[in-house]
Length: 476
Image (cartoon, rainbow, N blue to C red; front, side, top):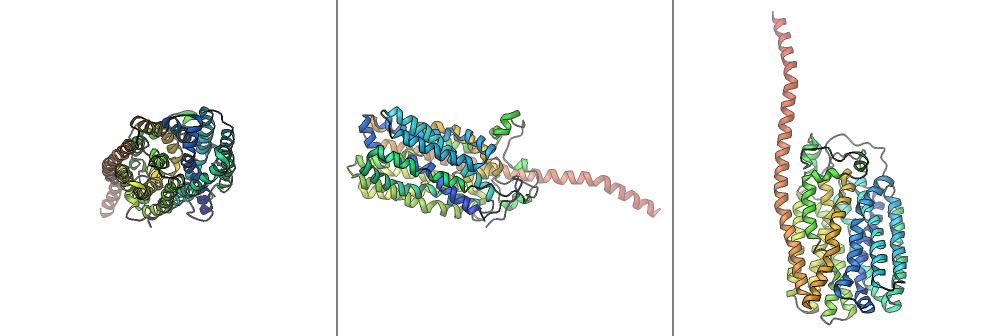
């Protein structure tokens, strides 16, 4: 396991202790944030018939919820920076619960967009980001492992909710199910209660910041941290109150910009294959429970993939160049979607669910770890807030565009081909750009060392001259 690097957090992360309780709370909070919108797809066909809407219109339900979750990122960042993770997560749980209860009385599809999509989605934003942020304050050496375990909450909860939602629908209808789900999601408040602020009495040693795409051992030993952050030289960021709330100077950070550009393209095809997995199976004449079981298979594989990816990403071979691992995971997703239409029958869909669960789990386990690796834990809250507000556009538009393709062509193959391209292209982009980014970082490190050596020599020259003069006087 790589050694710890020095941080700018103002304390030394304990890498354990109560941190594991925090990981469990994050496991629940992150799990509901990502699994909830996916699990609601079980109700799509019935809600679609109830309100007499098209595939693209019903797809907006999950899309608005996910987009609201991402759009609420900056607000969540500001609240976390101001109040800490614990109260923000608890308020988020109450908001999602309220949204589901109000949605159960809905009479139009717009009512569901507002209650499930906007209110519920914003509540999920208050659940997601604080859970991601607090892990960076408790873990450093074991951070990829902790992130992998926390991100495993999504498939575990999805694995539970997928068959549960089918049972609830059969027993109580979609309205009664939404009422019960509103009660279940209150567990996020319990998760928030576990997120006790870290003990900051142990001060961190001064030095380089972590998360610079560098091996941790090199980080700890390398001075001039600003040269190795991947930031361009220039202004010092936005002044005043905005700078205190959220760090917009990240838009001058080279690694952050690479991450942002690739992710914007990737998210057009990231969620749609999950949203349409069960409807695709039903379209092929597969019964409802078998279609729902595909989500459970997907979630089961995803469940074990995420912590496994965290352990692999924490190894001394992978962590120094973890961005390449992420690039492979994104490309793997693209190839998976391109092959999906070629797999026939229910057996083919089961194979696809297994491979997709593996690929999807790898991306999700690394998605925020690689961002923290790029910008450092102390800037992560601002970074994830800026990323999510920009990503809300592709998250919002991705599933409806995919649904429109289904409406136009009357089948799902074109939708899966489009999603495959949207994933494969950014995967290749990440490989290429991080190759040049790593190369540039190595050059900057060498320049930094050379500058330090010249500075030391210049400082020593007057002293050596004085010592030489004294020696000459002594000889005389």
